[in-house]
Image (cartoon, rainbow, N blue to C red):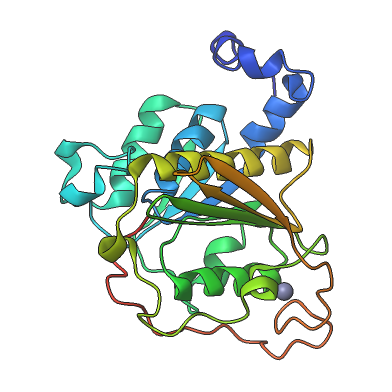
Length: 270
Ligand SMILES: [Zn+2]
């Protein structure tokens, strides 16, 4: 596949990088990334991946755009209020880059459909805002041997880690089980600074791009935390022993997907 003149110009700042080059840009154009959640995290991820020329981007979300989303979910505009988020996201991404094919899934992601959703994708982005979804994505990706980027944001804080099969701990290695329902506030209850999604979502997009290029070090085996008020990033080394994990360990006890009870306000996707 040869680049068109328009592509050579569009991707010139990528192609000039020795870590990308024409070969890397072609990898990006041939890559398939699924974003689960078209909210505060999913919005910047989707925009940067579309701009980068990721050839196929899937986006899954059951919600419609709400006025209270627009403080952080920058892929949606005021005119989009009431529209399915996946449709609004698709319009923005396609307007940004016609090279990108956007596949939309206007549905909740559950144990029933997640394996089918992730099977055709090279890398998965967890842009959800609730623990049941985060554990479901982790377990499904471990079982399907798919790499994914986990992230969470609340108030002035964010966190991030990357799972690659066989190369470090999974989300469940670190966090074991979801907290009791309502033990941890949602962003609707606790608030979140809009730019937090931009910081952490951009890092998720960067992890996906590096994974596809096969360049640099991924955030495997580490949890990155960001405290905006203290302006402090911490890269915490995670235990490398995954043998006893209930899902990715040597003798897994979780062999089927679990739909944990949805927390209240789960409609507020970050
Ligand atoms: Zn694990």
